[in-house]
Image (tube, rainbow, N blue to C red):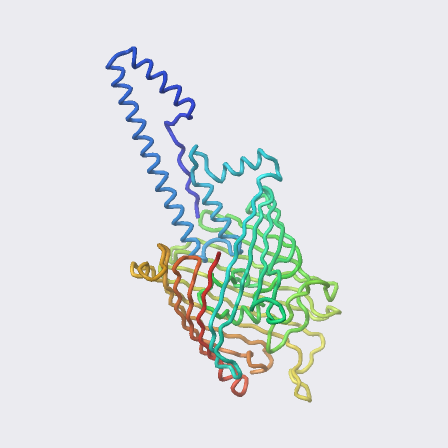
Length: 475
């Protein structure tokens, strides 16, 4: 989004100079008689009108900037796809908001930090999100239940002009205690060193740039409660691991920006399965199991085209080796797209992950046991029709940014490409219909019905439908 610079406050004097000028003018007026007094009054009136016009223009400009921030929150297809893109964009807009002295607020803050030294003027922000839901699954043995989903704490610290820390601590299903068997984990924690938008070096527990959804998985962001199956079983959402990486945004032209995110990590354990896909292979947190490392990356492009309001396309890859002897080469490739045109929004991804195993074991041995997974993949496509008519703002709890979304998504996943129906999750196809209500951009109430079945024999394969009601919000 091209930045619109704020016009300088022309015709205004600093306060001290203005006071002096007024005093001098008053003295002259007293000695020069009625004619000079009238001229002074006219000049004063002109200045007042000029000040009123300036205040009016700046108020309108700030209102426009606020609307752009709200639009960016709604329209996630714009801009870079990392989770910090929105915050960076808001900071960029903030730099355009004029302060009382006519200096942009963001510029004033940066100048104050520079005057105070590189390690002074840092900031620390806290936030996060929460989600809970009611789920009624048709799977055998499942009962309608309220589910405590996620309580996530997020933090960002601007340590200096070029150093930043970002982290997220996640508690799932009530955490871990004698009464609960949930999960408490560091979702990501990283230090970023960056002097410009073009390049930033990062280190720590990094979110893996393997697919788009993996980096945009927050529950309040998503239109449906259930996550795409390709994102869960092939991309491993949410997958992170210790390592180093680089990211940046490049302005190729006025109509095209490019972004990249590449990380080097320990990689994956060789524990792929037909039932869980890549999930049990995430990630080697303490020790690598071989001497090789795995690289994940995503390259994106955000062009401005005439036939849609916004478009974001990307390509992902994963290269590494598996096993203690690093005998088996792993290669993964993926494509993703997000677009918006008026009230219509679209998202979709495709991915395939293959393992070139030196020991080519059969898919099923003589005892009927499954051999190691050699390939998995999947895709999804999702369409949303966003309603922002006047009647929506009359709904309960609605703010000015309130909207209603009508959602449809098709999912397909293959967790073992050598066998049909190797597990209940293998070769599943699903169609989901949903409606969600966002009383604000930060809060969403979702309702969905998911119709699904897989190639696995019996009820576990044929009875996979579910109904979900979810509440999620940022804070």
